[in-house]
Amino acid sequence: MPITDALPGMKRELKFYPAKNDAPKKLTRAQIQHFNEKGYIFPLDVFTKKETEANRAYFDKLMGKAQAAGKNSYSINGWHRSCKGIYDLLVDNRILDYVEDLLGPNLVSRMTHYFSKMPGDGKKVAFHQDASYWPLTPSKTVTVWLAIDDVDLANAPMEVIPGSHRHGQIPFERSTPEENNVLGQSVHYAEKFGVPVPLIMKAGQISIHSDLLLHGSRPNTSQRRRCGLTLRYMPPEVRTRETDHAPAILCRGSDPSGYWQHTPRPDGDDIPKRK
Image (tube, rainbow, N blue to C red):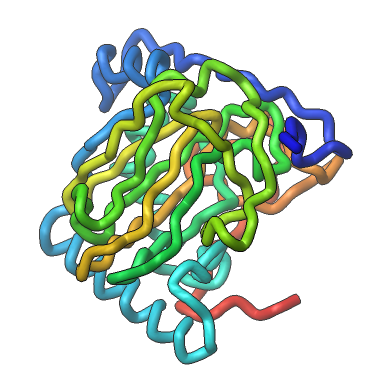
């Protein structure tokens, strides 16, 4: 049965808030208009070739640690709290410059996740909306998808459905084991909202999409890995379940309300300890 609220115990405001910026510093006005109308922007250049190679080597190091601990290629989720390298990517000023043009000068983050589809990986990411998963309100979060590897049609790029973010909350169903979904929600017949667009990018580039945009990816049937790092940003007026204070990284600017409590940069690159 279709589900319209994954978090029934939390009152949330799930609607798209268009970006308003008459004097963007990094994006063009046309790109901001595209984001408002289509729900995404890509590709945006960030890292040099040398930096891109370093980003890939860094992920390989973390993946080695994860595999040694018996974890899979999707398990590096939220490690910015214990890994300084992910933390540094999250607060990279070149990325924040793009995000600021959409969300404003004060930027908060508490979510990161590497999505690494290994060669021949049979798993897909079913079409979904990020906002359906997160206990956040209002829905003003954007996702930056950093390409660690080159992404093309052969190795399962992320696909987005332009304009689907303007429909608010879209009903979904819990994924079944037969779907072999990396995540747990599936919006079936998502194509009725539009024709999917694959986000083809070079390693070191990023895309940005709204938390209400329908997106997903097919299984990687190629012999090449396809890895991307998601970095999630929001303005500080967004709230979560905690009533008074909540931990997050104040990536840029400040939170005048004091609700978000800054998480300092970790010293090492360690697997998070279980609480």
